[in-house]
Length: 299
Image: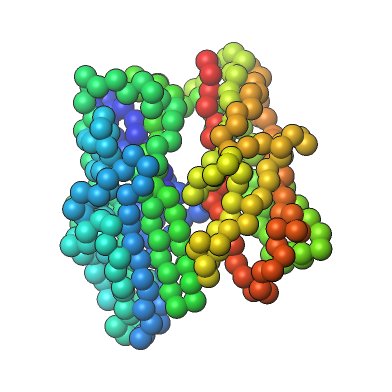
């Protein structure tokens, strides 16, 4: 989940909530799972990175203390939107009757909730420009293991003066990076394509930009890791390469985008699981990671 921070016309800030890789049909603020009568679901919203828990809010720390993202517990049938959840507390949900979608809402616009952004103009926020700041994590689990695990980011524009975005970035063939069945005797590779383009408001000049990559749980020793669903402490490493060049966590690559309208840059990103790293794993074991490409213009 990403809370985008932008200047508004009144000199303050506004926030919009988006999700990468698709969101719940209920909206990008909803983290839910389907459960049947009698089934239970455990969940937790916790602070991480530069976030702190503040009652029913995830708040920023230091210069970002004016950021508050409300948390609510949610049930679709029967409808419930409860504001008594305390950030950081593990909790169990139960479906009282029939099937229902239950879980959390973060930064939603229902029931009078919305992200609160009251940043101090006297504070030096320049180091956050063009950056994505980790504030928290959301996790849902059922009897079979982890259902969802997502990070909560605060994303700042290239300039806090209210400049409009000049680049777009999205993955195509993102599902190509899903490993279904793998074998211990051989390496497995999948490739996804990142497309970087110009917005309609981009200036008619060549736009240099840098590209870096992040992993959901960070990357000790600069490698990327998939963590287990059944055992969250178990992980397997995977490697990332661009045009045959192996890339480490937060390594930066530099490109440029042509000045003509509609100019795009297509970047193939290859993910590799080494067969030797799968030795000893039981059949049916599931691992996953949330991989993020960060594109920053350098005009």
